[in-house]
Structures are given as C-alpha cells and as structure tokens.
Image (tube, rainbow, N blue to C red; front, side):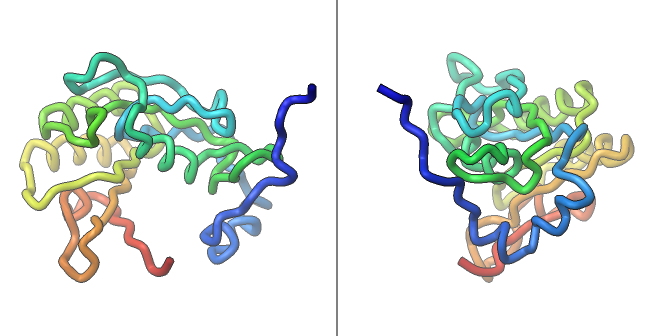
Length: 183
C-alpha cells in the first residue's frame, strides 16, 4: 500500500500574518545555521536534514528531544517547504540542535552557558533560545556578549508571563527578546 502523505502542507497563521512569503523572494534561509538551545535533537520527517545534531549540556542520557519543545521551535524556524506538515520561516536554513534543557524542560545556568560557548565555537550565524528564568546571571550575559562581539545575534523568548515582564536571558540588553503579539 502507498505510504501516507497529507493532502497538502499547512502554513501557520504567523507565516501568513507576517507575510513571510514576500521575504522568500529574497531568501528562504539558505546558507544560514541557527544554533537552537533547548530540549534536544528532533527526529521529525518535516525537518529531515535541516537538523544538525549538537551536543548535550545536561545530565540527560543523550542529546535527543524527548520533551518536544525543541522539535516545535525548530519546526517554526526550518520545517521544510515540501508539501508535508508545516513550513518554517526559513525552510532552507539549518538548525544546530543543542540540548541545554533536560527531558523535563529544565536545565542549569552552567549548562546553558556551556551550550552558548559551543554555539560560538561552531560559528553559527544566529542563536535561538526559547527559555528563561527570572534571575539575571552575570556569566550568561558575558558569554552572550562574546557571541554578539563575534557578530552572532542571540534571540530569546521574552517569557510566558504576559505583562509580568521579560525573563532572562531575553531581558539582557545584548539579546533580542521575542514575544507573542496574538494567538
């Protein structure tokens, strides 16, 4: 029997609302590598070889994503434009997937700093971290500054507290904090 294939690819409301297809006339992210620090290396058909397996900076047994958060975040970034599942904002980019959070979605500031240093060593073009906490950590700000000084922007989640303020590392002046605006 033929393999299952969805009838069509879905486009998230954000792709449509932000008019990402207009940007695709200039680039779909080809040649760009984003270091994504989160819950581990995804294994998903719609990501395929856009995923570059990275190291594990947690106490978890391996670098794989058993939580699902990194799979979700990497899909938003680079899910392929392939008539399957969803399409990401930069479907021709690559994501170096670094495990900085364990299988329950928790991590240490030391592990996250080591993951940032790893991204610097690997010379990624951008770092993305959809994580955070309420306490600023001087060492993390310092490591982020090394990335910024090397021309690598660090993009961080503002947090999930709405009007409660911006979490760290998104709250540092050397990062770019991203928040939801709807839906």
